Length: 136
Ligand code: SF4
Ligand code: SF4
Image (cartoon, rainbow, N blue to C red; front, side, top):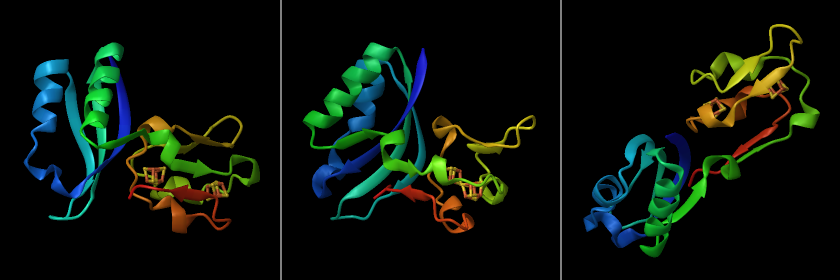
């Protein structure tokens, strides 16, 4: 069993389709919605964590894609210029999800993208503007 996070963008007419029901029933996946911005009649965005067998997650993602859902791994939506980081630690103070932490031995910033919940609080917290996060 593995866990993977994806950003999903739904077409406006997808509200009546039981996509998550099929992911659970047909692909034996556990679904955790970590963030949602859905507006009736417009495109919606979800941050979804899928848990299950690797091959079932891949099949589930294929299923979503065939239903016009754009489905991208979370780390493809996060752009961080690590090489410019001065390890000031400001961003770790706002990252409640624990994705940004300081290494206690080297005092260098560590970024575990798998823990990110796309709250976007690190964007204004970084004095060097090193984060770009594309959720919508
Ligand atoms: S968006 Fe930034 S602050 Fe929010 S969880 Fe992700 S890394 Fe942490
Ligand atoms: S706030 Fe910016 S410069 Fe400071 S540790 Fe975080 S990413 Fe690096």
